Length: 272
Image (cartoon, rainbow, N blue to C red; front, top):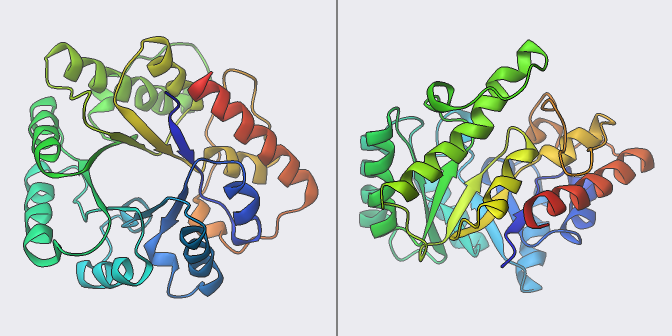
């Protein structure tokens, strides 16, 4: 079964990207000042496309205000949304999820619970809580714990070490959850973001079941910087910057051509 893929994109090419991806991915903090961005996702939902609404924690470093987020969900009515979480804290993330259930449990859409923590035990405890309470469980690409357990595979440039540890660290977390009998194949899992695209062929090669979806701006940001993916690999480094900071950027034909190629190669890496 193929893993669904979504990519963040500048407003100018939102439709071009949507035409080549499985579902749509939106950042809530961009709605207020970018009505064209918001209206795109309303249109996608009207056309029966799935939309995931993120609480923008990666961009803001803290989850979007809960009351405003709840209103945005009620207005947009996305297919699914990420319940406000707290970076690197299992206890605060679980507490935030419980408060959300108490205050906003009737808001439409599937609830995605993000796994947070600084140690394996914290991550495992948070994971089990989300499996029991959320509709979908999300695993981030940039937990600091990955720097302790990831593998530095090759002697690339020194500044790619962190990326490789992130890439292999999430693989290690999932493998360990499986080995410990904690992983729930019956539960849909979402992989939040990416460091290196090559990470995702691991899950296909190792027949890991339960991964439903992935989101990343990686192929798009690479194309904006005229970086073309290598077949079967992606890039050996990560494009600099946040897509959210480039939401209004102009995209020329050369960039769009590279982006379309990168999207195709990324899908092949993930799904073969």
